[in-house]
Length: 258
Image 1 (cartoon, helix red, strand yellow):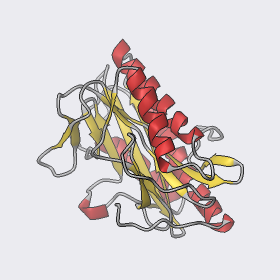
Image 2 (cartoon, rainbow, N blue to C red):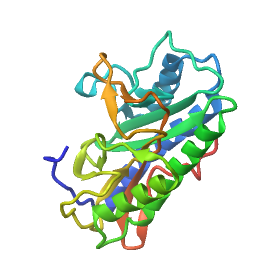
Image 3 (cartoon, rainbow, N blue to C red):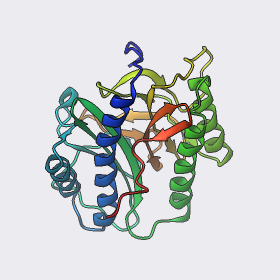
């Protein structure tokens, strides 16, 4: 993704991206209500795709670099990019990361949440809480003139202060008329200088947080990323515009009624 250029959006383009991201938000809000023990990850994929198509949008991930599903569904030690399956059923105590994107009128929306399946253990509960908190810590840094590294630092500091680790092999990204644009948005601080934030940039900020090691590996399916030590991982993501008034969370679920 590092070779992708950074694009600045005008107010009309930001509005189009708000529209696409609100479809994503609606889908994720719906998934919160249908995730339960016994449902298959393929059924969740179908719910997401059907809602997306009914609203005149196209699933962003389906066929992207050959990905077979509309929804990324990652369970427990799976970090990201889990493939929907007819055979895979959710079990009580699982945690499920769902990542969804759409394209509407040429512009993309992208967001992710991690959900409990029934009652979960205390460590998993803390993992979800800290990961979501770290996302909002990062979003607070979306101010004109700040650097991408200010977002990275805010995420990393909160995660590590709570005893967890941030994934380093996968990062957030710019988003617009392409699903992945510049800049890359790591969830950890790198040594080199990072780009300054400008009004009109839109960023997909997405902490991926592990209970144990930050190291990951990719399964033989070529997609599913798991933690190297098989401990649990959580993933939260919002698409956020840089505005004169600070961050605008395009994929906010606050005004969605399920």
